[in-house]
Image (tube, rainbow, N blue to C red; front, side):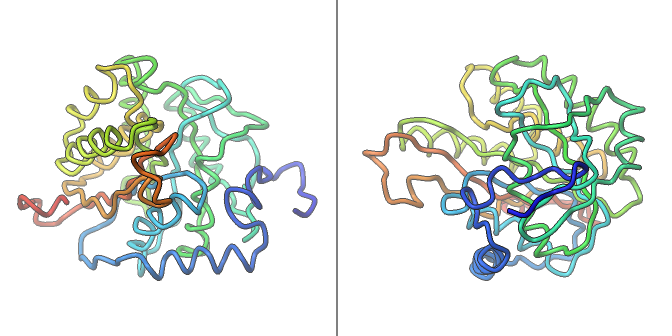
Length: 297
């Protein structure tokens, strides 16, 4: 990795979670995208949900989400993810000017971030160890090209703090919708699903998560995320905040584009030591505003 300036957030996962050279990274991302289904629709794409494991595990699933950006343009991408390692409080954003990947620098949308900080409490951080946001960037760089970034780390997961996370998600969603309304803004939630040592249990619990998301049942999803104290999605708060933001922006249709898990990817199912679920989702605004029974799947 080349030397980076002080105003650039360096990569901590290039060369491990995804390829470290520009050529190899472009090829891997483009190959994933070429194998993902594109679902044409005239509806406005407001938000995506994409997984954040290493590319050999979840890269193909992520491609199903980013493939839907074909032919679309956005000026700003609001990227919502959990904070796996650092405790920065409810809402945190890097204070760097750029994020770096082997495909180049991505400039943060500092005007948007300053406006957001006037609406909600935002902790600006100089250094973080979070992979969930960065791992989405090569896909966005390949599909969108030029865009500005609002990288938000949420530190109050439902599976740990319970329903108390709801206020932060609602407050953030209201602020994001106010700032995004009438602009070309894409919201992306970065999250894996169940993390268990039981393949069958992951399939069962992730099926329920898919059912609730496909129905755009945010209330039911919030209850499911916290009531049994198990991690049904490590980015449960980012998912809820993204869905609430999309709904406030007029989204009325959800399509689950792909769902799998690490056991299916590796072939290690019944005897797997650890299984993680992955899902790609698109959230749309339909001019008709009416959704048939199977349009959400």
